[in-house]
Image: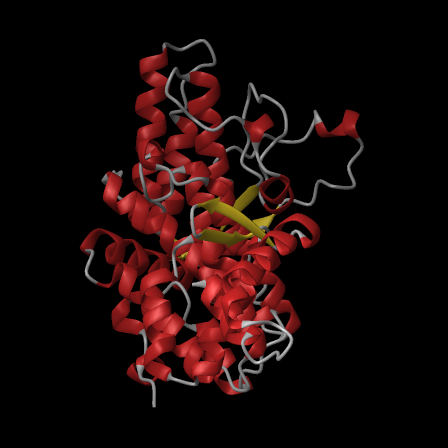
Length: 397
């Protein structure tokens, strides 16, 4: 094929005789291979580009120059989750004059990955519900909760974890974009309290039982920064928030942070152990409902505090106690589910879903032209169940 293309070009040059075209074309191919490094002969009559970038560029160039929405959609449907096509998608995003249809088709295909899988749709429903309950309802917080799930088993079972690096990259990239567009939702005290319980429960499992739990020394820097997780093995885990009774008749409980950062290390040893719950009167946060938890949870936490096993108690006692704490976290704070174990196919779909969302965001961050309103709509509706996505976002004109 290449030789024939070269022959077609050479036959217009008067100095080259027709009977020499085949020979000349072979000489040119050999010269390109030997001297320029652009092509490599793979087998008889088969050549390839020596650098993948050339292939990626010409594929992207072909897709863009067709100026055909159907062809563009076909590429997205067939190759969106193929990692070797990553640069092609980035190049297409950077070369299209208007990328609105391109991004809508990518967004639609990403949601089709999980659209017909009930387990994964249930996971996204839970994710939407828990971030709403914790007063941190935004796409970057949904990504962060999914990331934490890969380490702390909020929703899925440890046996079915996806490589947390994908979830972390998605959370970090979404946060960067939301910061750029000034759409960051600050963490609520309720979210702080919830993650405090998660960390507390994980430390109990790790230090008091033989159950598989997280290893604090292996936590990513992002989790060490964002969560109250310790870098060291903790022998006596403590909860870092207080629970304060606002109005017993209203059924609302106020939570407040302990201010211990400025206390000298030697003095911290003398501070009260606020493990689980401290109940007292508190009205300073009454106007902010995101600082409240259910009264039943507060009372249950007090009960757990009082029934906490002795440090030398048998492992079975600690495991039973930790399971009761976990049940309360599920019941009152929507932390966790019924230890969902994904099938191998569902794990693959979830990996592809993470990857495709990351690729979409990287394309948005590239030199692409996407109308501001559509960009905001797409970002705001990432990681939502199908029932929560407007049909207009899934329709290409």
